[in-house]
Length: 451
Image (cartoon, rainbow, N blue to C red; front, side, top):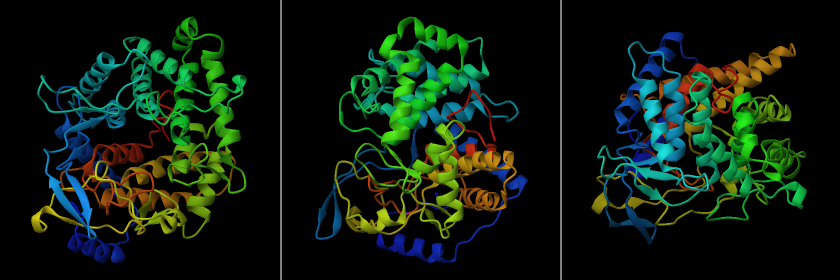
């Protein structure tokens, strides 16, 4: 959020000791440039056969909780999954690569081509695929879920590619099919629904995630802003399923159902009042130019509130500190992931889920969102000094804590974020968002601008 931290008592004690004394300042232009170059090096080292392995040296082991200790049941192989969302981030990062002699565009194309071949008939993708470097096994479905968010991110990545290469229509049908998918699982306002897109077609069908719906808003806006794509989409997506109709419904959901006017922020989702950090980051990045309340929310909670309830160890935590204080211990042996360690018999000490944690993916997201907010405030001739100070702190933190191989961990402590337990291994998500933060690139609006 740099030595890999394991979830053992000794490791947690070491993190606590270093965290207490940790404070970073603004990184220099040269330091930021070097960090970006090294981040690309990490992505390159994870790439193979049109896939970026999402984590480095992470082991997906099966544990059970016995008397407060996670007991190792069956050690499995290195977790070589390529998570769909992470693949989309890699495509976008590669499209921003300015290194001399790089082969990044070819890698971005290879990843998109693989997703084109893997798209389901309904327009979705699984949330993860194997990423082995072996043509016989790479691309095999690793998780069966058809979650909206990861699927939409593939569409956003393809939009980013189309923006860079406007004459290349290779992925137009793929993008339109994603739009069809989200429109078919939407509780449309004209049918008496709230306008939100459900979590997936094959699970949690009554759940409407604000994060996912912000993704959908950006995808539909991106299609609408591309005249050729918009015309193509409207040939097959008509009436209640049209781009305009679906976009109007999701806008209603975001601004009426999950917007918390009393606290000036988005709720976590339909019937979910929790306050994840990405309600600030995602909200500004996906809607800020169209729904300025998102910018006001970001500045209120991340800049004007001191200390910010999301800030920890010069970085950003996943959730508001009150969510941390109220949550219980989270354990599920199937979904909990830990890095393997040399601890006794492979067992791991229980993690206190109520402690704050540094979430490096979210820290990079915060840098991008704050750069957008700064541009918005500057256009109104409002003061931006405090916003810039936060940008310097968070970007400086990402640069300072980059590991020697160029990667960034997903989180420092591996705590539950109230939705799932985070990993401590170096991650594609954290590393890609370092690149986006340094470049001021908003992946929700790849068709518009950087900041």
